Length: 512
Image (cartoon, rainbow, N blue to C red; front, side):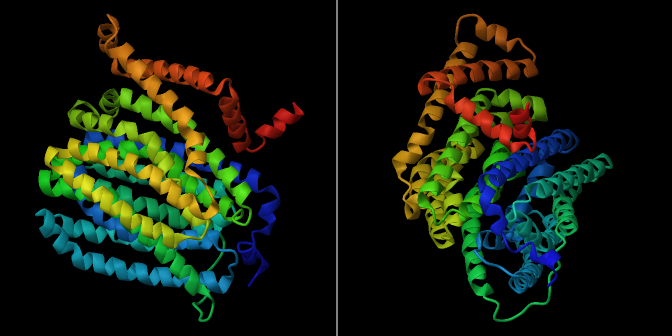
């Protein structure tokens, strides 16, 4: 094993400056996801005008099943490599080949099941779509361990570059084919291009080369951890996609198309913050599991920062939800705007809820996370079944209610092994939550009910309405936040953290 490859396995050099690496990693991840969000948003806006809701609904039908399988290993073996105390070349090589073999098996099984999926939806076009989408399984498997090694070493700026290029490739491929009249095949190209770009970029920027698989490497423990993590992902995936399956089955492709676009734009802010930051949080917190006090302090500060950002985002997008969809997708997507507004109140709370995974993974307790996933699936499924008779809007309301119900118990269960109390977690977020709620309600009253203001507001251009609503809500939020905290402390803390995220910026301030 060459010293060049050996550097990927030992992380002792990170411990002396763990906070700096974690903060910089968060900055890189946020930058990557803001860029990816912008790139994918451009793609969504353009494709929504070139394609029909039926095209989007058709792709959603097949991806509701395919994403579950293509994420095998990406959700499981990645975390196993990142959080492991000790790894070596033989162990990771063996894990790489295990993952690739299982992914090939899943791809072949998915192709074999394609006729059943087509029969379930009564849509024969899904057979060929399943064959094309199955290539994602192998492409993700090729990239997993390389990305995991980069994550373990907190090389998040390299990962950011890979993700941005992959998203550019994805949008370019999708729009190019849509302009040539490829209809839903342009959406297939968009989805396949992302793992293709990720795999190429990962092998270029992580020069580790897998060796032959070996026996007696101790990889069994990592496989069990990965399977528990993937088991939780599977349960979570079922609970997060059962809504789409039920709507497509009960109400057809068009209703599913409206719901899918509203849901996609709803979870985008979540995907740009909480889920990508999971890699940073797990990598950092895993190094602190032997220091419970410092672990709790890091986690609670992270929770406060997510609440500071997520709660006003939730209020603002709920307030301007219909105009947001109208501006981005066009008037033919009006129903999606109604559904998006129903999703809005959950944006902030789902950011908070997502951190329960940080706790389970960084503490090495994927088994507890799996058990929680079973409970989450049961509760979510019950809510979806209650909302289904009321159409896509009823399912959206059911989704929001389930998240609010699960958040408190989920954080308590995740934090129990490290001694995190419910009161400490509630104390970290309640002022941000109440400030955002009050700001949203006051803004809603001012813009829609207060004297002649609603008439003037309604007459504005849709883009101007979004800007006005955002400014009013933001000003009220920060005023209420300062009042509730008795000063500017949370804002200063956030600005200080944001400054540290940018390499060189804090050093310039110290020397300036």
